[in-house]
Image 1 (cartoon, rainbow, N blue to C red):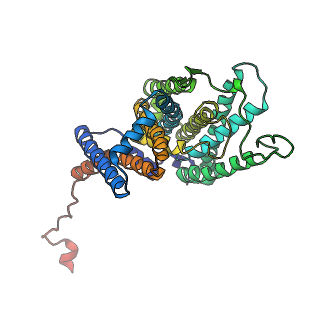
Image 2 (image 1 turned 180 degrees about the horizontal axis):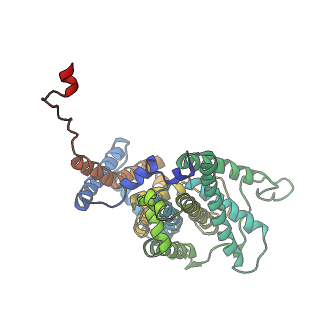
Length: 393
């Protein structure tokens, strides 16, 4: 497999991304989406009934934990920011036709890099939090770039390598927070026991917030995520570089003939996607959504959920804003629902059904139009007039 296979039009990931792009049959797609969402909600309600829970009470618990009061809104908005950053990174590389599915590991590596810088450097004022976020973005970008290098020099498939690198990232972070000489927390007292986590970040390494608990609290990370989303949307749609990215995603062979370095651009968008995921890890570390400590479970499925947000938004950055908010509602409300006794895996099942309901329609409509547009292959006509060879025989 050559380096150009990073944007190979026959790659299964590229074919999936092509199916998710807006195409003809918009009304059919919208109608099918509404129908499948209704089916997904009905199936979710039936599942809750079969497991002995009330659908209305569960819905009320989700609303109470996410939107009923200022505390719920704060939790929802805190979860929205990292989801949105991961989704924006997915939109960038997906526009170029590269399928990155290792965001969970890239989030962890971003948190690891941010924690290392935040706990090792002594910088004055807000400069430290800026350096923490930059280090997190660089860490996630370098981690994703390793997959591009593996493809370039060893021909390793990008979806496979990014996925497997996630498990390596989990082990690396676990080692870091379990080793005193690396990032494990300091032992308190003579007979103290250190847990598998880092020390908390200094106060000047944490993101500031507008408002204070129990009132509505708006963290700076949310504004950062919104600004990054708008910036990426403008760059992809209005800039020359964005035009090249879209050209590579639509037809890499044409882009190559137009002078675009297809493999290099695909590798760069993959690294940029990892940088956004790493920045989301830095946000998780430096915002009140966590304990401001590096832990092996810091990502908490934010990488996977961010990937799903991008798929539901069909790789459009601005559409990822409301979708990430909906997923944040499910995360915040799901935690409150779990506290009432409903298993957390039921919330994950509901989330998966909704993702399928939003992702399947464009694929099904594309298959339908493809079958209708296909021309049947007719058998070659058989001549009834004997040829010279047949006559000779």
